[in-house]
Image: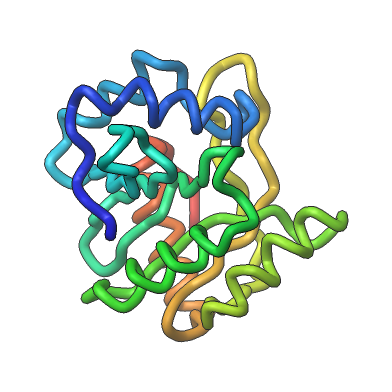
Length: 177
């Protein structure tokens, strides 16, 4: 069962984040921790209460019209046990808004597998041009795509979602004339 992260669990969550995401797809420790001060940013964990150990986490932004999953990862020792699917299923079933997440375009086997994983849980791949703005000055923008649940996005919905993500999550403005 997903539970709101306790402050003392952040180091465990960040450790999983570092092991699961390249530097270009996450902030540094201080940057990630600072997000916890925002009212609309939350981290939920799946923990082994007996060992007081975080097994997986999902970090979300609760924005106006949707929930944006910025990071979702299972600790290495708990992968391939069905835990990720169980968490995603629980999260999707409890969500009261559209869920949005970013994925790499299907250009390699890992990206195709990741997209396939989300599709098995009824997420839709929206093939509109999208990039993740820089999270730090040292890393380039990343070409990505958005996936959505429970329905695919129209182009109009995509444009509004992208604008909201860029403004609230990335503090970035796209010149759209």
